[in-house]
Length: 143
Image (cartoon, rainbow, N blue to C red; front, side):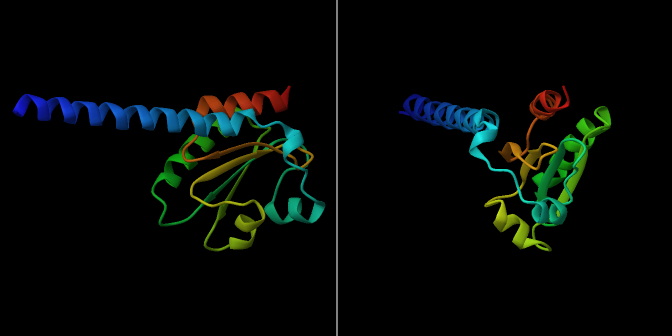
């Protein structure tokens, strides 16, 4: 009887692990796959309100003081932006500016965006993005 419980526990752990990996891959895919045509460019007022750069790409991420993973996003974005000086980094506290979060349909924290110089959204990811994903999306915009 005890060996069957061990087998059931192992199967459950494997199923949860697989679900975690599939969920992570789907999140990354949703951020990378959408083309610029799916997201319209922001108007001048929104670009100015969000603090987006008009000379190059901007990494924008929403955060809050109570959000634990937001610290990890900040580290990843700071690391990538240090390597790519032409990229602007904007961090918006969702508790202070809920209107900006509403305009961009932010439903969970952390959420990270990349906008091009025209104010068009080119990347979006919920959760903590990897430095490789951010660098890849930004390099295409800097070319």
